[in-house]
Structure formats: structure tokens, C-alpha cells
Image 1: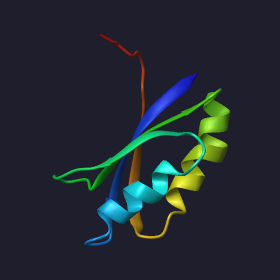
Image 2: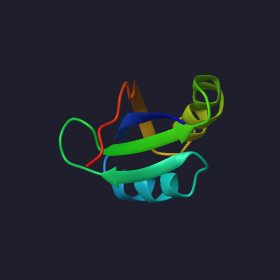
Image 3: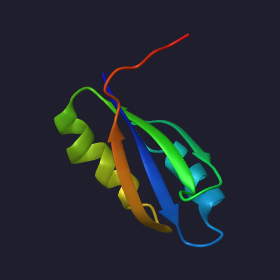
Image 4: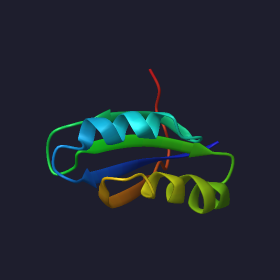
Length: 80
């Protein structure tokens, strides 16, 4: 499985709503609204890089209220 974090900026006051909508999408592992320069952090996953870029990323970007995204592929995960 290929995974990435997406850092998302939203319209003012929409972070919680956007995070909840993202949780319902296929390929979304988790979504939290946060404070700081980004409003929502999403962990996404797919079977391949191609599927991640062709399917999951565009579905996230189409959620109403999102103004900007930055996708950060996970190079190597460390789990406790």
C-alpha cells in the first residue's frame, strides 16, 4: 500500500465540516482538523502511486470548501 499525508487549507470556518466529509471518501485513512498554517491533515492510501494520484487525490480536492492542498508521499513509515 502507498500512503501520503495531504495538508489542506480551507475556507474560513470550514475545517471541521471538510474533515468530516473527507472521512467518508474511499482511500482516506484518517482526517483531522488542526491549528496552524493548514486546517486539515488527511492520511490517504491506495494500492499504487498511480491509483493514489489518479483517484484518491482528485476526490479529496473536489470536496467543497477546500482552497489548497499539498500532498506529501510517505517515504518510509515507522510504527510503534
